[in-house]
Image 1 (cartoon, rainbow, N blue to C red):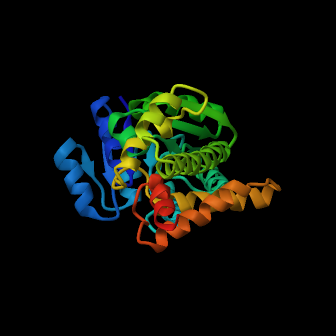
Image 2 (image 1 turned 135 degrees about the horizontal axis):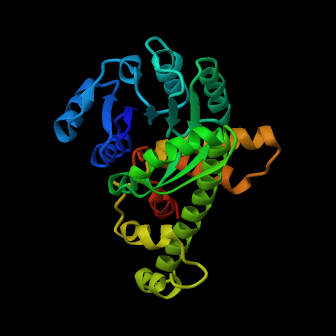
Length: 290
């Protein structure tokens, strides 16, 4: 059993922290909106802190799952941030999808405080968090990762270190680049099937077991055909992630033409009020414009 703090109790963080309790760890939580922390305590037990520093004090591990670069800086090194309160040798594990730049900045700041920092973005969405079946991509020092991995397994089906600090975030960028293209291709395929007078569900049954098959096809085609987009990963979050990918591509001299195009398609979805729709809502955009 480890002493763990969890910072950020959104749709991902709350179930992840719950799995830590169920795995037998001693968990203290912090959330900027305290009502969420109180609701979590009512559901899982544990302790609630009023600041990141209070949550982090005397913990073996501090996990975070917040919104963006600025949110991560705030909980780490802002006023009442966690780093200054963490004991020497503790490990901070960040599950937020942020830039590799801020990750390396926090890694250096952690090192100055005699603690370790692991970047550990996740894939699997809200459903994966609730089932404890996330895929987690990590970067950071080998020793710190080795200590953190047994704790992370409480909510993961696969956890792997990809290299030094920032490697986890770079891997997550690859993940989002691939998803963007896959969802657009699936949307176009379903749109074409509808326009061609085919039964899209029958088409998917035929092609899903072949070379065109994918997780997106297996798990999203039916809700797309039903025009249901109130689940999964929101367009607003995807555009934040794709901006990180495109900025990194500029920095590294990589060409991402499809990703840049799909990012603009998601911008169209936002314009029609779909910022909180699931990323598979690219089909609705096609059906409204085509």
